[in-house]
Image (cartoon, rainbow, N blue to C red; front, side, top):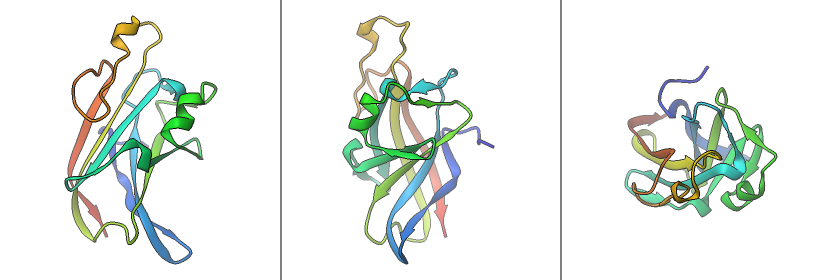
Length: 143
């Protein structure tokens, strides 16, 4: 079951591999009413507690498979359904400290029926975004 907000409270946690914390993850849902092909997805930045993680440092898990931003741009045959959450994974040795964190995630989607002039996206800012934007959630908890 998905939560109403784009940034999901469930799934915000540190990532542990072989007994070592190697990073953290954030679950998000698409807010586009039809779902989106990965090649239409325009990933942007992730900001946690004021620290910027550019799209090149974020791996998206969709349908159980990991994709970089560059791989998604070429994945025209993979569909992210509106009913499924994606997991954004960020490598950060030691992960995030226990406690509350402020989280921002920026992404958008291209729409095949819109003129190309609308298919612009400023991955670091809040301008030039037809379908998507910056989503914020304050005081997310890692225990």
